[in-house]
Length: 165
Image (tube, rainbow, N blue to C red):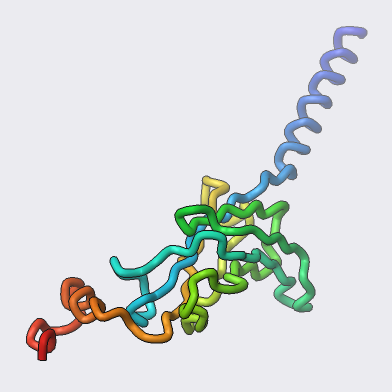
């Protein structure tokens, strides 16, 4: 009888341990970059400058009520990259990363469509890794650099006959 009770106790401890593990959510690592679009191309080019020290914010809002459920801020490192920790499961939320402001003089206009990046912070989506990669966040330089026509031509975006005319 004691062996049966002991076996049931061990089975119960294992079962509840596994049950707790199934509902224990790990943190998510959100990574991305912030850049200055020096050619006003609305995407990264070889002339883009990545922003050291740019402040960024991760914010999650409940998709039904719009209430903020999570927020965390950070700054970009020397290479213009950031890493933010998203704590908890946010399956019912819309989560976005936003660059709060520019650190490059004369490059502080928010790039339309590049001023925020939506990310998914849930384990229930088929992604095995807890790392989430956000699209790069961009600001536009007031005036494009002189090398931009060449940069865009090299990328195949403008015909070569327009350069130098």
